[in-house]
Image (cartoon, rainbow over all chains, first blue to last red; front, side, top):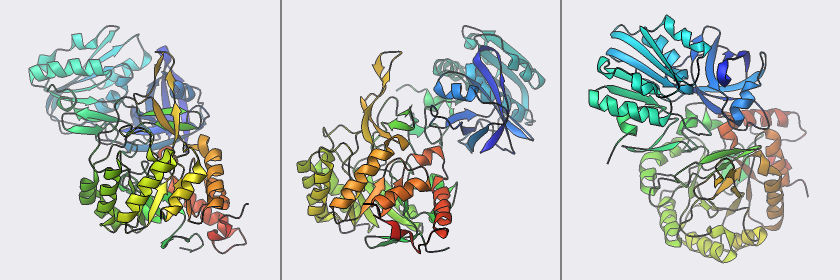
Length: 236
Length: 302
């Protein structure tokens, strides 16, 4: 059990949740989180938004029962947290990179951005965010990116200048990831996607989050959540 | 370590009565990275079939009040790959390993059981109760006639202890348990998940592509406990209790109801270290009790 340091409501049902303690994770890894409640039996997978010296921060949006329970949490409440789990984004990337996030898919990209800043082999890092409405957390990205492009409504994929990048990390709705992957293939870009999945255990035991890939059945929690785009989006 | 939790189940001495249930613990590898799983009494492998299975399409888990439903569909690497890649790891662990076998035809059960029995495993758990594979129509464990057939035929090829995992959906659970005993099963484990249903009201469609799914978790515990109580009173062979165990108190209830050991399933998803926690709590419990060994409470409640 850990203690919540804050659970700050943002616009459009987004929340920033900070849990106190010492944490370590690779970019793109996730934790399993649960508030003991009648209407929240299973843990929820949440990727890392940020890690501070005294705690870990998650960005989430209320979309169903579990996230509604989380939204009702207050400072000082106890909460279960397990992790980090899964395989995240690769550290050893070169050239220029774009991070593309749609909706709650934005969450892992902030931590990824901060980690990538330590990679001196990168020429520049651009961030693209697709949201329904303007939100408070967007500006956090400004401190670490060379260029921040935010678009409200519609498709963020229409605004990406693919020719500029060697690598793309993306996270968001499957349709968005697939669109990016097509372009990435055309432009010879190394593309990594972070997937979301319905899961019970988070460690590869329940097999709920199976996904068909080019290389057979994989499990989002253990083999992912980050995969090469070409492994997920393939055409027979 | 004190031996106050040691129990005997058939010919096996278990360090404690805590065994991890099939389908919730893989082959042990994932949890071995999280804690020292050799503290456990034993573990049951993910359900295996003769040939590899990809499992069911669509949604595979669904949360419900105090429980969950699953429709994994026995995704597994098949017997041969298991024997080659996973069994050596399970055997290397200092705990009892039980291999769970499923099938969609009698022939498949026999073939798989024979192969696994030849590997000299600690025990086979015959899964005649998975609600999530449809190939053979209803599971073997629903009717007495099909239960009799599958237990009789697999018994002929199984040289190691054979435990049959019963379905709570059986037409007559007590009679089915008797059939298992008559046909030479060494033990029974119960219960598997309950056949259950969920509807996505927003889209007015069923949640699971396979229509029905298996319900597990604390919501089934009082019913499962009643079944364990009834069955253990009416047969001579030992019973392994399963169903919604989350805490050491739940374990004690199952033991007092007549189970000689228990399996923990869904709780592993909620707290990956639940096995370690329960064993620790049981040790504390017994140190405050006027008994030497946990076996003394088995079946103590009429």
